[in-house]
Image: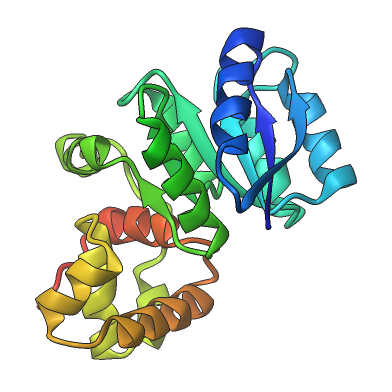
Length: 216
């Protein structure tokens, strides 16, 4: 059973999210939070598998709350927002969020995203992925603070996989692109995350974009 904490300040929206999640037989809503501070406190108390986090909340915004939840390793975070290209997206991903979805996501896709994040795989809404990557490419002023030397520990194959993650490709897409089994892709992703000290493939995609990692 996947235990989810829903953090959303608008009660009507929160109720709708809870209703959707409870319709899935393998998902349990462990708790509800109306602001960022409450989200962090409940994450510490309940230790859910996934926190479904709104970004614009009172007392403590969702990006700051995500940073705390991830830093304390309380849960994986799936961010929800009505905005697809504001600064919150980058802030949330850099804070360690495992996924990013728009609030207009279909119910079935929301449930699928929760399951994906619970499995340890990151997810960015398909409608956002290319625009997110384009945003990085279009803003050279968004300088990376990452040291390119961190890539030295990666094998050639791991660099290729990292480059594919930077394009927003799924494991299945990477497997097809690099002509390898999907299980092998998962192994490479797991290893490169460990070597780079990252918590999610989404963080890896951001790093790949910042450092200009491309598939050979």
